[in-house]
Structures are given as structure tokens and as C-alpha cells.
Length: 231
Image 1 (cartoon, rainbow, N blue to C red):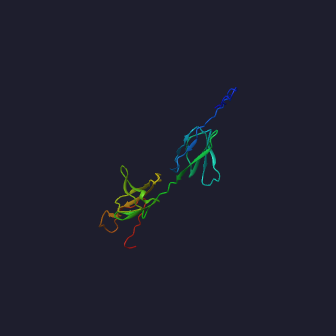
Image 2: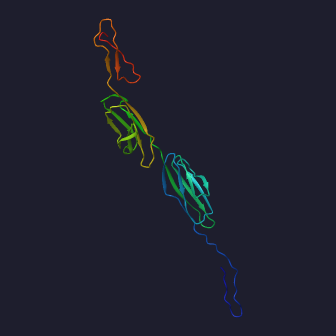
Image 3: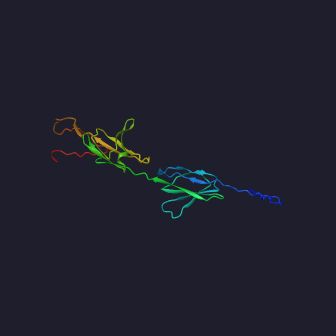
């Protein structure tokens, strides 16, 4: 810029020296409003930057922090792996324009535990048994049974199943939370046994002779106790 005075009478006009005025583009930074991740996962936080900031500094604040902690400098994108819910703030400054900041909250969803219990872990063929699943979101529970080719889904969205199995089998429950977090599956094996039966080699023998008797259908590791009508 410069200014020039108009000529007056015999005096000529005068022109001043030139000055430059630097107009800096406005600077702004915007972070995503919020995000949710599962425990153990990472998240990429991407800042949308308008203009050319002179500096960028990231801060993070966990729930128990009174003052944000300086985290990272001069980066518009970074990958975070918080262990718990954390607020991230990006502070920017410019040469002439006001500085500012933007924040985002990353919520870390803890993986809820699952458990599977049986009313009986060993039953006779034809008996009923109740399987009970424990998980905060019942509607997300998936029940599976191990078959020859792997696990097959047998029910969904139930906290209990009452079944009458005809053979020993392994059962499993799994779930994916509303936030998409995969729970650790829980397994249990139900043993189904045929009724025990005694077979006798000879039904009629002479006094003093021996006879072989065999018990079938015993649980593995079980030891039978023998009694006679004289006991």
C-alpha cells in the first residue's frame, strides 16, 4: 500500500513509501466428534485442517487425569490404542490468527465376560439338562454344538436351553456386543451315558463253579461296587 497527496498550487503531490500487509488465511482444526472401539483395538484419529497452522500439539486426558498430558506434536493423523476411555485434544497456533483446539472422545468398551453352566455335567440318555449362559446382552448370545465338521448354531438370543441329548457333546456360547466387540466364547462338555447293564456269562451253574459278570455303560474312570443278595 502507499498514499499520494494531491498537488496544491505550485507544490507537487507527494507519494509515500510502500508498505505490505500480510493477510493470513484463517486456521481451523476439526476432529471427529466421538468414536467407540473394543478393548485392545487401535483407532486412527484424522484431523481436518484448514489453513496452515504454525504448530500442532496433541494432548490426551484419561478420566483420572486432572490436566491433559502432551502426547504428540506436528501430526494431523495418528493411531491411538487407549486402554480406557480417553479424550484427545489437538491444539493449534498460527502466526497472526488466534489459536484454537478441537477434541474427540474415544470410548473403550470393555469385553464383557461370558460363562456357561450346566445343571448336570453327566446324565443318563433320555434325561433333561439345562444350559445357562451369562452375558449382559442376552439377545446377542449364539449357542453352538460341536458336530463332526465343527460347531453348528443351535439357538440364538436365549439365556437358557433345556435339552434331552442322546450323546456326549461340547457346547459353546459366543456373542458380539452392540458396539461390535467380540466376547471370549465359553465352552462346556455334557457327558451322556447309556444305562449301566450287567451281563452274565452263564445264568445257571453248579455249586462251586465260577461265572463271569460284566458291567456295560460305566462312565470312564468309574469303579463299580458289587453286592450280592446275601449282603
